[in-house]
Structures are given as C-alpha cells and as structure tokens.
Length: 500
Ligand code: GLN
Image 1 (cartoon, rainbow, N blue to C red):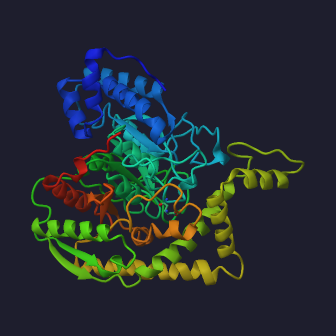
Image 2 (image 1 turned 30 degrees about the vertical axis):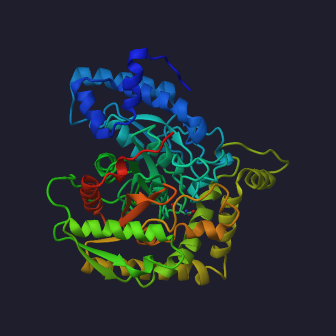
C-alpha cells in the first residue's frame, strides 16, 4: 500500500476528505479547495488505517490511482470543470467480478488467482470516461455466490459497524469500503440481492438496476438472466451520478437495453401523490422484530412526505427462493464451465487433458461454487431439465406477473431489504439454507428483473443498520433515487458513520 507522507498541517483536512460525499468532493474540486491527488491520497491513507481490520479489498491500485488523479488534476486545469467529465478525479472502488484492464481480477476465486484481464468492463470504462479514478478491487463471495463474503477464497470482509459480523454479500467489500469512508462510492453486482443486502447490513445506499440497464460486458458471469451491475454510495444523489454515468445501451452486450437514460432531477416533491404498496408477504414470522418496526416507521415517514400507502399482495413470493436456487445454479454451472485450467488462471498439471480439467476444477473452486455447479448440472441434466429448470422458469413468470400486476395499482413497493441485521461471522457459513434465506426479500425483484434500492432507515439495539428496500417498475431507477433522496432530506440515518 502506498503511504506517501502528508504534511502535519494537511493531516486534519485529509482525514475529513474521506468523509465527503461525491457531491461535496465535486464542489471542493471546483473551488480548488483540494486536488484529486489529495482526495486519492486521503483515501489511500484511510485504507492503510482501516483495511487491516476490514479486509474490504483484494487489490489496492495505489500507484495507478495516484497517477490517474494527477492526470485528472491536469485535465481540470486545461479544460476547466466540465460537464463532460462529471466524475473527474473522484475515487471509486470496483467489485472484483468486474474486469479492469491490467488490474488482477479473481472474482474471489482461486481458479482465477493471478489472472490479469486485458480488457475493462463497460460499466467501469464509462466511469473512467466520466473521469473517475479506480482505487482498487473489492472483496466478494466467490463468483458472487453468497450473502456474507465468507465464501471469498481470500478471506472474509468485516462489517465496519461491528468487526465480529459480516458486511453481507456478495458485494460485501464494496459496501464495507463505502460505510468505512474509504471511498464515497463503489460498484457492486446484484444477481439475487448482492448490492441491496450488503447495503442494508452496512447502512449505505445501494441501487440494483433493471436487468439490461447497465452493460454486463466485462462482468464475470454468474446467472446470466439475473446479473446486474449496481452502485453503492452514501446518498441517493451520489448513487444517481454513478448510475447515470454507466447506464445505457452497449454494443458489446446484446442484452443491454436500448432505452434512454433520463436525467435524474431531485427538485420538487418526489412523494406527493405517489402510491406505495407494502406487500404482506414480506412481513413474515421469523423476521427480526426491530427490522419490521424500523421499516414500518420509515414507510410511515414516506406517508408523511405525501405518499399514499396501500397493503398489496405478491402472491408467488414464497416460490422465489426455490426458483432462484434452481435458475441461478443452473446458469452458473454453464458459465463456470469455461474455467478449466487452460484458458484462465492457474492450472493443476496432470497426465492427460481430462485430468487437467478435473484436478484444476476440483482443487481451485471453493465449496460454494462446487455446490452450485453440482446442483446446476443436475438440474439441467437430461430427464430433469423440464422438472427443474423448465418448471422454475414458468414459476418465475408468475413472480414477474405479480410485479406487473402490482405496478398497475402502485408506483413503488416498500419492504425490508433483509430479514435480519448483520449476523456474526461464522453463524451461517456452514448452513447453506440459512445463508440462502438471507435473500428472501431481494430474490423476487431479481427474478422479475425490476430495479430496487436499499437505504439505511435506523438501527437495532446493537447499533447495526437496518435497510428499507424500494422496488420500482422496469427502468424507473429515477423514481427509486428521487424517493430515497426525499427520505434522506428529512432523516440523517445515512449520515451516521461507524467508529473505526
Ligand atoms: N446471495 C445470493 C446468492 O448467493 C445472491 C448473490 C448475488 O446477488 N450475486 O446467489
């Protein structure tokens, strides 16, 4: 890690720099209060302080980031503060399932140890084109399979609010690095909840985009019909900036939607006259009582801001978990077939090609990836395909239709993000079903492909953050962000930071 020294006088302001939101960083860069190099140096200093306790990163790109920041400062001088580079000089972290040219990328797996991709994910390219400086790659569950980062082959990440607890997953490193004030924002990916659930457990704002809204080019595939790229930040305003920079059609991803990306305007009354549905299936027994209490209070606050609240029903919700845990492993088993010791990463040598595949895969995939490959291969095998994958896809359509029907009556849906606050490291790691249950409230929106957001709406008795989830109709990220912003204007849960 780079530790260039700072003058004693700048020490104080440097500490404060990491407390700034993107909007505040932009203001300071504009007025010349500090440079991008100082911002990036402050982030690196913060990392050298907290990273030993957190382990939020798999790779810190100190030198590359400082060089990019110096470039950004030069550019600002030559072209002035321009709308063309809205994120000029802003430090951002990237989940390690997204490729960045010349930076190691492992997806949290030993099967990609030492792999250095020769290309950059479109989501990241677009952030860089907007001027952002990539600080490093964040930790995640192996191939984004998990809800705690404990399935990373490189060790788990700790929750900044309580180091004995998980940050959620699979984008746990991204969520922890934002919560711990290392970076103002980070990219994550959400296949079944991996942006929203860690955002909830770490008390930050996390947006899961509509399927197809952001290019998946350069995202190491997990469940191709479910994978989405999203953003985590402290405020809806900051997340909106990342979203606007990366969304939109990309020729390199045929499933990316050719839909206009609206300018997100935070003026006016986002909630006046808005109808918000509260699905009764999301307040089930077994949910932590404080989660129910705080999310209901937050929904009440949305009502006070002008929304009309209605109870609704999403009748097929209970099938989301079994359906997801057929479809996602089935697609994963196909996607992970490419990791064979020949094309990427390390190889375990053997006498013949077959044994090379066998040994490399047997030794380099971790237990969760192996479990999913086995379940998925079984579900797709001849004779079982119709009974499992085919049937699951049919039920998936019913889940999607639940949302379509609901959005004929309401504008948004509000519910808890996760059934409980951050759990203890080790608590669920040996019990796959308990781990899978963590996603019970995030999976339905993923199966339907609709966007969702999670933001902090209070704390439990252990001072662990609780997330409220809003789910919107296809391509209405703007509405989710506007409503979250309105809530954040009248509350300050999102301003609280963990003591580290
Ligand atoms: N926790 C879920 C899983 O393990 C979702 C992961 C994700 O969204 N990437 O599949």
